[in-house]
Length: 448
Image (cartoon, rainbow, N blue to C red; front, side, top):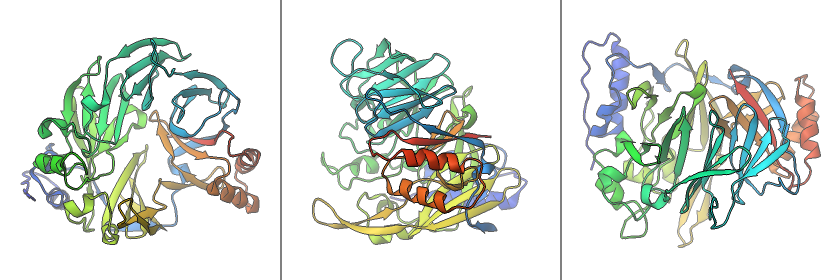
């Protein structure tokens, strides 16, 4: 069921921008797009099709003031099984490991302490899903799937608990929560859970919660509005549903403490207005590329033809640029939008689409190499991958011992004749991280 509504704009000064924005809104294809532009002024348009400059790569120097190279200390008490989540704050580095604990290091990489405790006693959880740092209060919030939200101080002492069951709140398998300027937000993607009660209330993409973590306001992906029953019907392979529809998570960026987001399939970047408690349009995105049929492009089991379309996966904000990341066919595309003059550059690289056999025996296709935004690390003379972005101030690249990428970077740095100021330091750190069991080496970029 596809419903297309045209928006009529009156008294706009820039006719070209009007036409671009209208084409974006019509292309998304439902009445929820009425919410895409709610302002009386023309939005800046990030045009990905016209007058786009082709470049070899983007420079990290355009986004960051410098980098730090940090080796996380490896001891019997700080051995990280696998990095599952990372946060960098002014004085600390926080790592959630798959063993269910949060490890705290100082900014030089020295291990300080663990946070959290597994068990069924007071202040203990049965499992850890994710965590958040509240810097002003110096508190760590740990979300357990079934036990609640546990709050500890920086030293790991238990302070309080909130009753919170994820299966009573979320209706999707991609779930997240964020602390932004003292407010907590929940995020989720398309439904896959069997606990959808009322689609119009359950199928939200972002939610603002109160001090007890009760939802007090929901925000919906405009492309979902009018499709709620259809989305619930196709939400999973079980519980009587049809197709197990899938979408990438909502992209969220916290540059300099400002909450912005881009919903999947929507060609608008929104900025949160704390006073109004609303997400207001900030930038419109325009592309001439075909996006494909909604049902076809949202099936979790992909045909080869699925990848013929153009799709944006993520974006990142900086002082001077907005970076966008996506693909078409076997081509990975990264864009840089210059906020000052509105120009756009694109860097392309090859990916690879491979076959794989599902557990039920059907042949499906996956995209290898589609991971993170890549830039050139001007200080170290190698590739920089934005593995994590944290606190609205930092981007982090992570090197793990024994990985193909780490080995390749070591060889590249050895062969380099460049004079980058931190090239030798990074090479020395990577060469000493010879064991797979060693904790990672981080390259932390501080954004301008």
